[in-house]
Length: 305
Image (cartoon, rainbow, N blue to C red):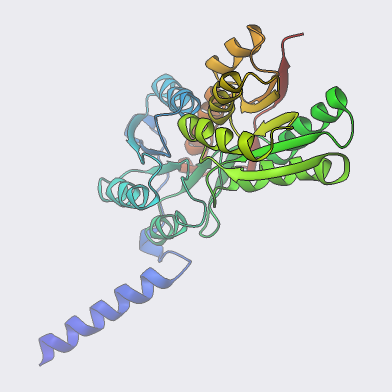
């Protein structure tokens, strides 16, 4: 009975510790002066998107320069897999977690797990809704959405009919890019359709085909990323219509499409820079230095002219 009581008390303490937002004293991370002793865990939402491949490359390049080890896992746009991936990285004893969330709400449980044992978390491109995050490294997605809206107004005038291809529901980038776009669009444009295509090129093609059937007089499309924009362009080309398409990210395929006159514009991010800045923030955190809660990476609107 005594052994059983001790076991029950231990389990109770463990559960209480897991529920606490503040890690116990023993779980707080030790400072690491030698960066060669630091292991980074990087969880990427998907490596089936050139933007996130560039982001990963930025992390790996900077980590190599600093002498830090990186373990990369690909969530394949599956939030449940991403949670399991992060839990595995925690079990492997990483010193800092860099997470590019598939879903900002779903990833919160994994962030809190890291919090409970004192592993610092830095998010890239998208935030986590709950849990303690040392820093978010991202472009100003709201500003980027505004840039896209203003460009459409400038080129087509007020009340132009526009379709919006939204990203993964629940992702902070989806919410923020849409919010910025609607700051302009709700006042100056006529948004006739909004549908999610999950940041995916194939889905962008399928969704755009359906949108064109229901709204043949669309004048422009704002896609929350370049992959969806490129899919939309395929559908538009097949229809024989001339519709302006603006994307978001600035990936290589989009830049080539703009140069060729197939795509109007993109709000270009710098994914490699985001990866680099995240590693630099991770270095500072494990060395006990303060970092900014939000670390911005500049945006620019890229057009043919």
